[in-house]
Length: 510
Image 1 (tube, rainbow, N blue to C red):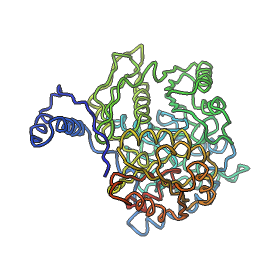
Image 2: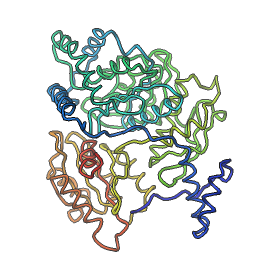
Image 3: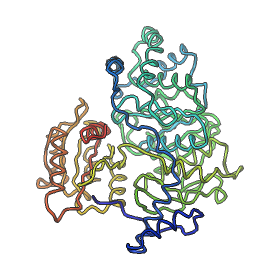
Image 4: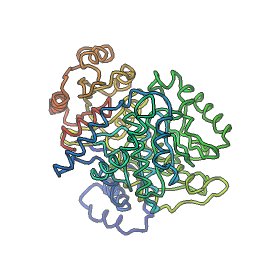
């Protein structure tokens, strides 16, 4: 297995004696390597238990599994997530007949193009560290539909998912009868999430938009904190063809008097967001100005960060171990921390800091399935759900930085409505060869069609076509194991959340 590169840094000032004990145990090894190993292991001791079961398996009880499948089938009979009638009219009507459950708790609303789910998971972990009960709503799911609705860091239990659906079903049917179009798959799930959070009850909801912002079904909440992750071109047929146009749609999550946590953005997108903030008297904190990353170093199993919060130098958090790879995840961590500080009322005028040990413990326990996730060794197989050029560039940079692969084989299966050429071009410098394939959904791009584009980007001799994903995985692993010379080769499976989820199941992680 090609191991993540270790950090060259250690902190000899840690008060815990564990560090010195570990170094002492490593007397037969290179002294510098012993210190590096000890530093990583000591940082891990700060972590609590990882966030709950991130990707649950099917229910073991046959009756529960059958009931869950029945709910999934009913939901699948509605408009899918890619068919939209841009309006919040239907979801607002559903909230009305349910008694406005989304107003029973404060919320943090997250939009952007990339990084939303990872940022939501980090925000959730931080809030949990301060003993707040959380609800998290994210999309799409990697393997199980229940992943989309989480309570206290764990996907909702299948029994509760079924019960929530049955509870709101009569009201859904009532709204269906009154509207020109039935509630969509995503709208019903959103209603379920808001109802489940109210029923729990939660102290705060962390809500990721499905698409856009202004007319997204989630946008019936009045969030006190709006988070905007990096904006790039995606869903251009619905959101606009420039970052500024897309920002115009996404700025709809910024509510009157809210605090806006703004990740680094293209200039034209940032201008749109700032203008909207002025219009609604919102306070804006910008990454790289009001908050950000002070330092970042690659470490065994992740990275070591120093983050600056909203209070400037007075809110600097050191020795933050994040068990995720890539500079983009470090930026997500800075955004998440600023969002939680804003939620607690911390800012330039109130320059207090949160408890650093709680922050360390929260970040060290973060997991984000399908985001540069290692699922197999010998050879190393990594999954990443990048599905647009910006996400692909971040994944390519992250895997190049964190792993010392001698040769990397790509397995790529995309949706047909994406910028496939841009995605392949982002991966071209790091893939020695690419196996193109397709997932099992109707949205998947045909493998032969994808191969034609891949040949234009990589050349005919670097492209292999395997329409079945299981065959593609086997082919890529065989290529990685081909010669002793390439004992450090690895495999990256990417192109779609669905492709990654199906690969995860095939590789025994479901």
